[in-house]
Image 1 (spheres, helix red, strand yellow):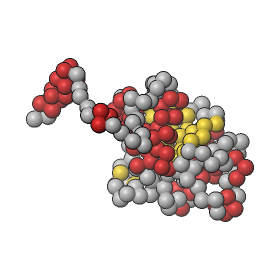
Image 2: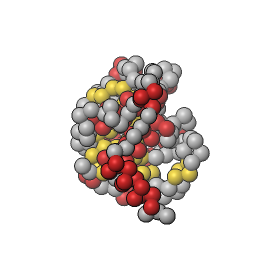
Image 3: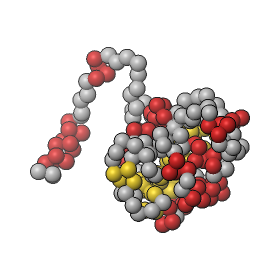
Image 4: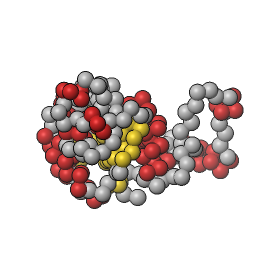
Length: 210
């Protein structure tokens, strides 16, 4: 599979995408490029300073199978970023999976990508009257919505979001081995044991760092 592109911008949410990005990297050995409009440090809404791998101008979209857009509480800086908006507008002509969570679908809407696309998100209903580019008629009050090549989700549904993206990329037929969310757990669910071979590999990796 090709690489995955994760776009970061001021105030982006780590927790909304961490289930997805960590599973892609650790379980499927997928390379993820973290890209921003410029080379400057980008600070997440949790206060973590992140250095982009590349800028939007440096990437070749053909190198990627999927683009991830995290949400953010303060959407102002990302909405006013014309480089980001121009980049997103260009995705309308590309055959690539677009995954946007929480408030990030607003960025897709501004770029015109939701005009004929059903979507969801962590979007205040007040925004539908405030942003003329946000199509109320296409909004669906669901945890996750997939329409064509666009997947959108509400922020707290980050594991459901991750499941849908992984399935859509064809990386697995069943994601239960990667995500264990349940309402209740038995003691057996919380006890983990490696095979002898797996434990030997873990010990070797530890010893190699000593």
